[in-house]
Image 1 (tube, rainbow, N blue to C red):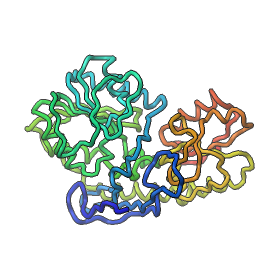
Image 2: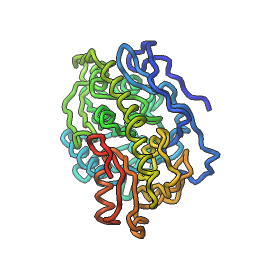
Image 3: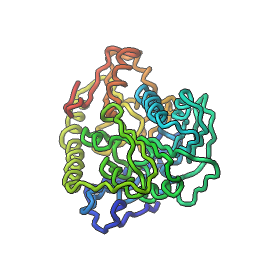
Image 4: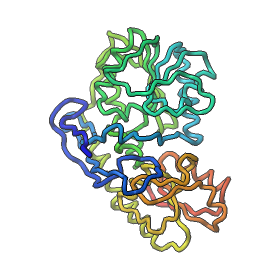
Length: 387
């Protein structure tokens, strides 16, 4: 497999990338499969930083057809359900009547919005997987310079898509070229700076190939004729909602001067925490446990822990709330996925839990609805180990 090499900083275009860290032989797909493990593909995941802009980025990209070989992010759970509702409310303040949404795979956002207002809604998505009750037009494909849309648009929407884009400047330029003066651009992005500061492993990976924090978003949008209307935080550290208007008279927002040192420190704090603190502690506890051990999260969360060195010899199953993953194998591993409901029949099951902002929701559900005697090995909000 040939990766796509980034030779220059995707934000500034400068040839000044400094290599930060490389994860060797990391699984290229973060979902679950039914194929044999011998067919799994792995590649080095190498991170660099621009010395001039401070922009952190993956230096070797996976071909899109391999990276997104199937839909794997179902956005299950209360946090994601509320995200769709809150983002729909945010959008409704601008009363769009004709929307093009990019990357809205399941259509949940369109469903929530149309409970509030009527609207023409089209979704462009490489792997459409509409949920029940979603009644919008789907176009199968990617948004690039070749994409042509023949309908009406007054609002361009995307949710947790921006961080997946290989060429953010081209992406914003294409949106700007598509929209007319006065049209809106409304989107939600993960709060990546908070995520990496809190050591969440779903912040940067083969899909999230750029560390797209607020200064870069706001500078980039201003360069392509977008004026900020409103910014809102969802759950303080989960997502950021942005509303922009196409305005040729918008002012350029400058980048802060200290991003290189700031971002580099945040990245190395993340790496060192897992290598020197969390994984040694987890392995020390796991090695002393005689009961059945489970690892929660059939996704990149677990792939990262394993890559950092988590001992999974005594892990019985992976657990995940997504029914579509059950009884399948997490790509890049030999671990089979089960529903957390299997914990009901086990006396004091042990669950390794490191799912970032979703930890509390998952833990409360298991204790309240499945098995109150479950023992969790987890990282708390202060990056300390709990048991």
